[in-house]
Length: 59
Length: 398
Image 1: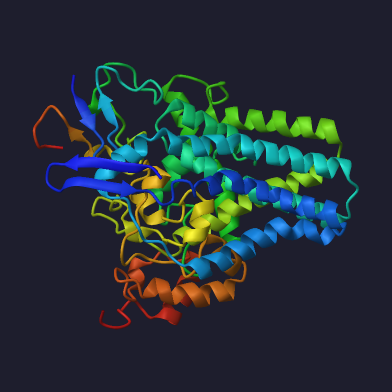
Image 2 (image 1 turned 135 degrees about the vertical axis):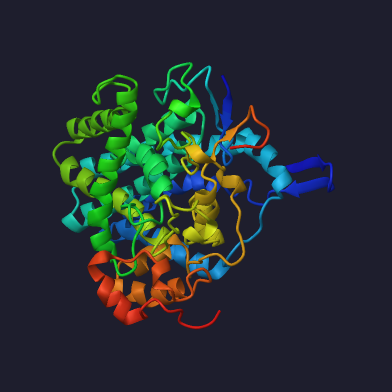
């Protein structure tokens, strides 16, 4: 279970928690989010832009 | 005057005083300008006074934008965290919400208890609508924030102008697709505001509804579920406006229709001028480059920004949508409107004047430099625009 950070606004997607408001139940993998996923808070960064916080420098 | 101080590891002690801290009270209290017409009418008896809020806002704000000019001061980046945490700034837009409700109730009560001529009624309804348009701006500031409370307050204030789909649509639709041909809320070169309105108003309604329906579908809930945030706001609108009809009779129907429409028109005007002709580059995979500051028309004019929670610093807003009004920045060399929003709203009403003022500014932007392939062009007028402004070759060397 990892966390993924929006590089613009700091929204954090935590796979363990999911995102109840957006309809992603706990344990939803980041990879399983829809391809057109955008940051739920700022909407100006897409899935590809999110930073995987469990790896040092990869997106 | 409050002083912000931080110790920066590289720059040492940074001290900042926000000159605008208490001037933001103007954004909180300006909705009461709606009462100026009524007060002058009651004092002097002529219905002509009822046009005062419109004159004050369109005429007055434009004049003071010209008079005071631009304000390009930015808070130091190191101070922004403290500025954003300061609860004083957070309270102002929240307190503006009840202000908008009170204005509509008072204006409706005035119409319901005075026999006005038709022009008099129209002036009061337009004045109320103008202020409820500012309410959409209040919702805009609150709806971009991350707390549930601020987002709820945004839905409540959107109920006043009957525009409950705005926040969902704006955040997840407009911001994502801004300055692309896919966005009904980004105007195109050669598109006048009237044709734009016919694309923008229904287009945004449909997209807002679709975005919320999609979210509810993921939650396994019906589109008509009470958690639908668009419906929540519409329900408040229905309660508010039906109560006004019950209290003051059928005169409320034309009053509310004009009020609602003119509030929407304020947003349409803003959308029209904020991204006219601007276009993000498309990547090889079909997606668009991130929204950059030059994908919005910016306006740093002091006077109207004080009435709009700095909405006109639009370039930074679109580049970083969750930034709060008090920390939005001005940047050098941005696409810049020649007057504040209210002045440009008036220019937009006369399409030939709008094209005269704006088309040359658009084509002269450094990232466009006459290259029409970098411009969002109205497809219905593409041939005409290519003929008028050249075939895509740069107008001149930069």
